Image (cartoon, rainbow, N blue to C red):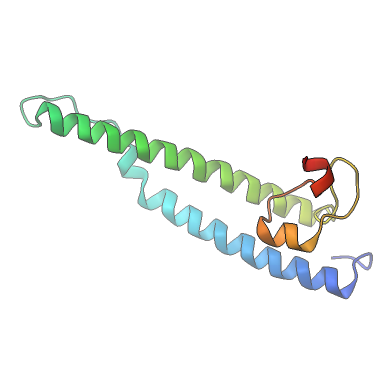
Length: 118
């Protein structure tokens, strides 16, 4: 964080970095814990009945969808950290104006100001 940032901006960046890093740790833990749920379902009808297999396939599909959402969120958070490291985090990527602190607190992955997001 260079001298270009005010003390208020530096404090906001520290707060948001801590929030992002905590969320990344939580996502990484969830990805590890639920990895087995998205594994392929065995098709052996002798050991598992048709309804149980269909139920397992539904659980698998829901787990895969959750994994995909978590991976997307993870990528957004990593992008936000890169923008912080590059000194561009507080600025809208479209117009260059400052993104409001409230907007970034609501979702630290936002990279557009309210006007450009419309």
